[in-house]
Length: 229
Image (cartoon, rainbow, N blue to C red; front, side):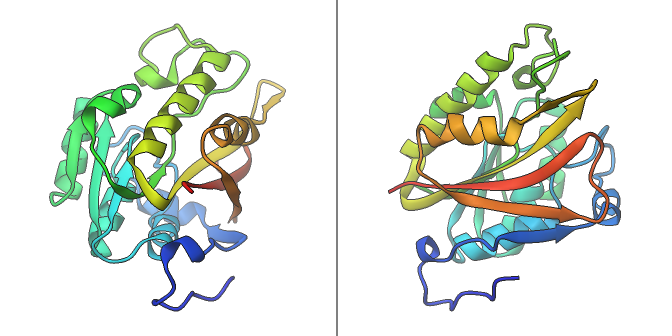
């Protein structure tokens, strides 16, 4: 693993390592009480990103807050944290898990109306979608059946534009996303998201998350890093 950068190095000059490790036991152990599914990334993964790309006191944003892993780890590491979550029951879980964080109940597609900048780091994992056999819309928490893969990617690009405007110069967007095998078809979700978001924010590179056992249906898991110039 890449050695830690000196603390007097600005975050914009501290690249993420080419790989990080994670285990199925970590994921199972960190499942939040009351959650109906696993978190997307482990606390150790979140900590590696936050420690590398921010300094104490910096503001970390997660527009798809989920169960609050990024927010909870940010607070633990002495950063400020703000997140948006569409499901009210998850908002309550996050507030219990990270009471010092600001948690807003809302739709990430309206982020421009919900959050003000400047933000130092946006670390998030959007709800996943496959290009085949996926009528439920991830951006409505899978509660509607108007899912369309191209539209989904367009919405993520629009969200990236908002994040761009919220980020301070030199600030980073890090997206955790996987390629997925479903019903004999592999969706290159990570690469499609990289293209969509990379049209808005310059792509810096990818970090491979090396699992001892890949989560269900994953063919590869990545952190995609973008940086505002």
